[in-house]
Length: 343
Image 1 (cartoon, one colour):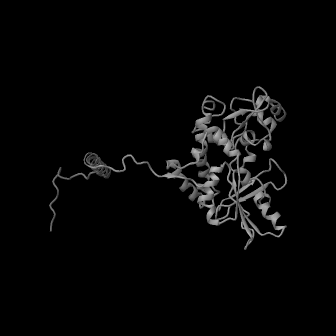
Image 2 (spheres, helix red, strand yellow):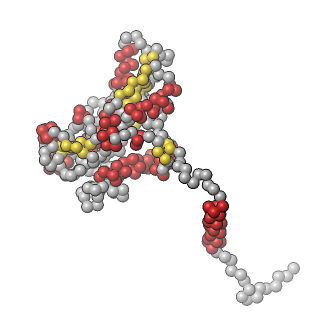
Image 3 (cartoon, helix red, strand yellow):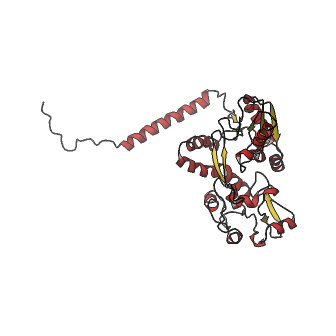
């Protein structure tokens, strides 16, 4: 069969692919809009005023976590401490005996967690060691987590610890409770809350960081944006904005804190000091100058009037004045004082 040659001007141009996709998208969008309007007019939606499920976070250490904590700034002997968590979320050592005579569980905040203490010297582990010398085989479960309150401990007890059937449960608290209640007046912040974009982003970050070192680095940044930045936005931005020496706004806080050198005045006291070192509180000057526990202060945070400041648990720039004499003894450089300076 012989094809006749096409006449000039009769060739049809093909519609570009982008135009087809645009028309398809417009058709789907129009259909959805019309359907939505029709349903709003002719159908009663029983979920119209319903609130989403509230999520209650279980405040225990993540199972399988393994931190290497550098405490060289406070001791030159055995400077690296391992913080390992078993598959049930208890800080090692745990389940020292099999079988055991008794199982004792410890719940509380950082004073129970003992993050910077050698594994065998953490006090829940010491209980097992000391009782073993008296002929008792006692397994101890350390379920402590920094900032946990008694409210959180009860959550862990009811929703997690009961499955391990401990014979004795010991609560150790007060510091975190005092900080939370003095600031918020209730435990409402530790109760269930609707899921948010930030909370949904935690799961892929947590899961991905266990298999990818790249995602692990991203998780460090994600922790800043989801956990720390909201504190800055609430308490620090009025002073620490683009006009101050340290900008803590969302776009600049990470670069201004993590691996960033301290001010020249601070460098005179502690050469090569860094504001924040990831996963290393004892190497972070921000932590050393704002810790709420008096017994662990290296030097306080100076005030211009000669006193010092400290941060209540759960806050960063929510300072309160301390005794002037204590401040002058702990810090010899009053020039370090600056309104709400986190160093």
